[in-house]
Amino acid sequence: MARPVTGVHVTGWGAYAPSLVLRNVDLERMVDTNDEWIVSRTGISERRIAGPDETTASMAAVAGLRAIATAGLQPDDIDLILLGTLSPDYVMPSTAALVKEAIGNKRAAAMDLYAACSGFVYGYATGHAYIASGMAKHVLVIGAETLSRYTDFSDRSTCILFGDGAGAVVLSASDEPGGTLGIEMTTDPSGAYLIWLPGGGAARPATATSHASGEHYMKMKGTETFKMAVRTLGSTATAAVKKAGLDLSDVDLVVPHQANNRIIEALAKSLDFPMAKVFVNVQRYGNTSAASVPLALSEAVAAGRVKKGDRLLMVAFGSGLTSGAIMLQWTADPAAMARAAAIGPA
Ligand code: ACO
Image (cartoon, rainbow, N blue to C red; front, side):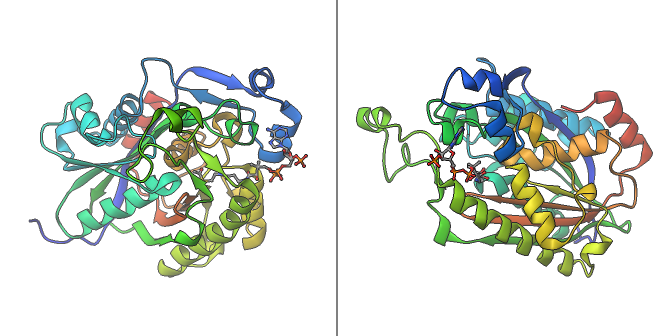
């Protein structure tokens, strides 16, 4: 085992979104809804849907390879692959194992992380711990989802919200200043059934009846989830900033979980934080769960919203109820920024 290091930095990043676009007007033909209602209640105008040959593993692999290329590394430089997802390709094997095969890595350990929309942030925190302890030098952390396969497209209260995609970062050991500054993770099971997918697990195995009654689709108590999300995102974000020894006024950009624009605006208001310093792309992707934060991060960098030395706050919230936040200082070198620009965003 190598010696423990003090610095854990984002050295690579990348994203992938499927090309099929599902617009609000398309949903108008499927359920009793309309563009104006969806935009005013959620901020979402369209979302991406995986094609028939795309899965969580295939999208995760593209995002992962882009992150590795941005870092200027080869797939075999990666020691550990962590995949946050609630829509794995199979119950077993892990989707991370399939990603390892797809990216051509021969040496990494690979595992899935199950923390719903907080999956990427939980993965980042786990990767950080492996690097800080000296157990890994480069960790590929991915958030990827094919939520369309778990969405009931006859339920207007949920089908308008979700989309598919993937995002990834490479975390690397370095004793340079900056990098990860503070991490907070929480789980509050009192709200465990606010967002859930009842069927197909050991508690309610798949049967003809469970299929017929729609138990294999995501269910959500929207209004309660909304309130919990705003409260929890605020406290988690504040805790990560505090652990970094900073104030919210030191934060240059917040990259929040993209669940609903009204949640993001309410979060900013509750923290008295300007929306001008919050990155939002929910309008084009909807809620992509574990993919949302790394997808937004990649787009924020591509849009020129992140420069060397900036202090970024990533914060997520999801089923569980899980929540996590990462405070970091962006240290990517100009060569990595140029490689990312050549690859492009999602
Ligand atoms: N189109 C038109 N009308 C609708 C639609 C729709 N798609 N969906 C619901 N309505 C109706 C309801 O039936 C209700 O009608 P009623 O008053 O006649 O009963 C009315 O609109 C209001 O419904 P609410 O559910 O109260 O609407 P709300 O303002 O709460 O918005 C929403 C619903 C958008 C789901 C909101 O509650 C929300 O965003 N919640 C959080 C969702 C979230 O973030 N979930 C995921 C987090 S974790 C994870 O991603 C796994």
